[in-house]
Length: 481
Figure 1 (cartoon, helix red, strand yellow):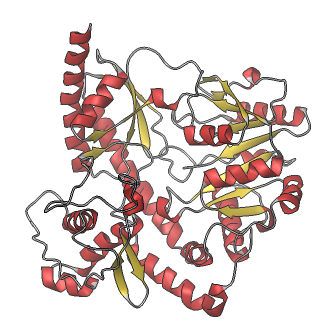
Figure 2 (figure 1 turned 180 degrees about the vertical axis):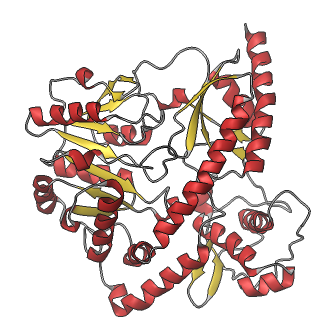
């Protein structure tokens, strides 16, 4: 067991748990901590470093969530084989070796990550999470080793159904819910339920992972233009289109909220012909900062034409890979016929841990807390941007974990993102969200600025760094012209 001689700087701007995290992550990456090696207990390391145990626990939990460490109940924390995290190097599945005859591929240094979809890793109730996981294991005992229900554990599905009714107005019995490892998996499963060769209408710009998933399934995808209310229903091709994929409560990436009138138009489209369905991706509806929560589209569908997709990636953590899909009754019959024999892709232990997290009231308290945390970050970022001459307009800020900033600088979006990357700043532009062949926005850059996993100090420093990136990108574009 390695003693971990970490030299902490209590006066540094970087939090102590981040210093511990970075020390261990670096030592694992370059091979100084080898696969299977046991780390000191949180209590022992805290005592050695003369810091609080919760600080060490936060660092360990982050490393576990990113796959660097494995937590073995009753045994401790062990180094994982992280070769898969960095791909295959020179035809081998191991990490490249570092100095002293060891060669290591240069890794990207990230100072400020403004990518959308990043969640806060500081305020998560790690101690509660450990407890519910332990309780789930103890409660299941021998049943833990048996295969679970193909749709997911019934108690978990019942808890999800109760939550959806209370929080989103969605009405779906546990029998019509399917739990799976991520939305992409559930979309692929849906493809087998509905059948091959279908045609899907999608907004553009959109969530490209869903687009690519449909394409990989062999589905034809039509890019449908949007206005300020979302997808233009009148522009959906009438010949053969049977699916419409939308995010009505908070469209990604624009942040548009679809009003009731447009929702009813979309439902009317689905009712016009047999076999039409709407896929409602409700990916981050939990975090709304203005007005009352928007009811789900599914709650308006009295005749079962809406397929509802939800996930715990933003509300709990991306690493648990738990999503859920509610199918109309007629599609559930097709599911049982075609896919009912598939094993669940989410472990029973993880399902029951989340179930206890929700049923015990911890999930609700965590959401309430994080709404406040994210709102403060969002407000701070907006205040910072409004003082910048290179920011023309801010929108999409009523919900979610990112805002959209339309810029007024004299450079291209691509040039700005490249300059930012050189300075260790990760950005995503609106151009990356358009469906292939669809008309993209023209003119000046539009950025999606995520704020979830940045502190207010980091947001301030990151925006100041963007000042220099904009200036650098403008000079670069002047030389090209």
